[in-house]
Every structure is written in C-alpha cells, then in structure tokens.
Length: 273
Image (cartoon, rainbow, N blue to C red):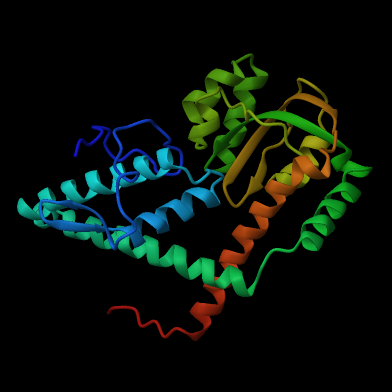
C-alpha cells in the first residue's frame, strides 16, 4: 500500500488523486492497518460525514484522501508513543489544555443547542441598529486619532505641546498607552460610530470639526484621551444580508457570556489563602 506523503492535510478541504486505498477496501470493519494497528471504517465514515457537512461531496477520491490522512495520523501517533514525546518537557500540560479546550467547545455547543440564535433575534437587532443610525449622532461615522495617557497632567502636557506645534502622530508614538493605535501615529484604522466609543468619547468626537484636536482631555476607564477628528462621512447602513453574520457572531459571544454566568452562579469558588 502506497501512502501519499502529505502530512496532516485538512480532510475537510483535501480532495486529491492518490493511489487507490479506500477504493480497494471491501466493506469490512477495518479500512487499513498501520504496523498492525487497525484503522476502522467507522472512523473513515465519521470523517467523511464531517467533510460533507463542510460542503464536500462523498467520492472515492475524497475517501482515499481521508483514509490517507488517517493512516498518516496513526503512524505519527505511534511514533509519538514510541518516543514518549507526550511526556517530554511541558507536553503533558499542553495536551491537557488542548483536551480541555475541546471539551469546553463541546460544552458551549451543548449550551447553544438549548439557547439557539434565531433569525428573528438577528432581524430585530438589525432593525434596532438601523433605527439608531437614521438620525442623531450615529448618522455619521468618524475616523479619529488619539493619544491615551495615565493622568490629567500628562494629557494637559500633550495638549500644550500640540498647541505649541508638536506633531500629533509623533507624540502618539512616543506617549500613548494604546500601543495598537500608537503604532499608527494614534490613528484608529476603522471608521467608528460614536456609540462604539468608550463613553464619553463619542460625544467629544461629535463636537469636533475635521482636523481639530479636543481642547480638553477626555477621561474614560482606559485613561485620559486627547482626540483628533481626521475625517467624517454619512453612515451607510449595510444590508441585512451583509450584516447578519456579524450580528450572529455578536449574539454568539453574548450567549457564551450567559453560559459562563449561569455556570458560575452555581459554582463554589474558594480563593487560596
């Protein structure tokens, strides 16, 4: 039996022509053996179903590719065991964490079965967002830059330097605590609606004119912000079809937080002394 030498290629996307493996297998329990260890047809069928769920079509080529992958995996796992690789260094801890992550994903999936995201919820949230962007402060979206510092005194020092002709982008790189925007000279790369900003930054941005820096620093729970309005434009609401995946993801994140909250209400946690 000749095995294609492609290591751990995703069986969900792989569909290659390789020497016949699955095609020549009778409909028995065992699909192949690797150093005497059996690779079962039930595992092959399970992986084929997973591939079909992702849009693949069951075919001899697909089954060859998946069996090829299962054979390679078995050979690698045998070598891992032979060399006690799982016991080296911190590998046991890493394997434990990986197993925990799988179980946590299964736990969330079970919660989502009992608390599914409905089309009605997604539509209602879209309509709510559409309503708040028709007029008022969210009818426009903004490009801004900011310098975030720890204290009001530091913020006033930044404003004094800007009034004296210092370069905003350079000061942001040197002084801003928000390292992500600091790397861009203080620029927040996305267009933002006022309600997406940490309060009360949204109100400050709405009151600025293009190219101007806030006269006073704005305090949030992140620090003191010196803000510059770089550009503004009318907000164009995406269509429902364009928005539904993003809204669905936000609901998913919210459901996960709800699941954690429900669980922790029942948990007894005693901090170590």
